[in-house]
Length: 312
Image (cartoon, rainbow, N blue to C red):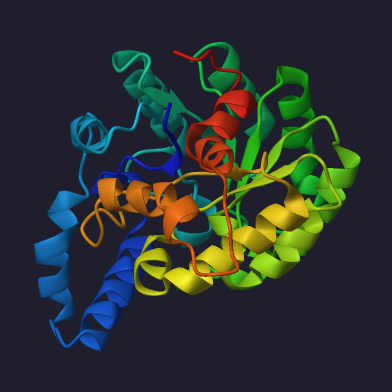
């Protein structure tokens, strides 16, 4: 079973305009680095329509094409910092729950709520108990550290409900702020809530060594590799060494496959990304080795355990 532990379903009105401006800026910059200079308004016109997926049909089609069995879909609450979008975060949580209900056995929806919102823990609880949401997504880059007291009611609720918490870690596009997402800021929560399974999104990108050491000392911390697609494709030896080092420190049961789609889907296919992982035992550079068991654990076995899923 292949499980994408980190992806999103987007519509323009679900997220604040400053976030979209940040996406435009980074896409334009990436394209320019590859010799394709486009005005920002043209970048938005060409690339953004492929993001919109209100029924998750594009996501399901991509999963089918790549052989992905299930995907965890994560809403994003940026509203308190970047401005409230036309669709409230409460309604977005409800929409995500409905998408999972409409695609049973394929989509697993998490809740997302800024812990600084009034009644955040109540919204989270309703999402899990009444709407069928299966975990919590936090994005500290809007201006809080994941070890702040404001987050603790949500962690207590996650412990009570028995669901995992995934938190963004690693540098992030403007206007979001990277300093809040350094993995060490998860440490207090890991200690204070040992019964909660935490997942550090994106393997913390450039802070992966800090994350590896943290995960090696805390048994309730895993990581996903979403967002590493282009590094894996273009700098495969470095990618292999990074994964091997993390596995050596944190263990083979703490790494999860993910994509962060739809952001990367136009740059590299899910099928190619999965193949890069499947090839690890056979194509890793000399001196770096992976087992088939480790690959199967990354692609789905570890996620299945964390989510409490059966084989099929």
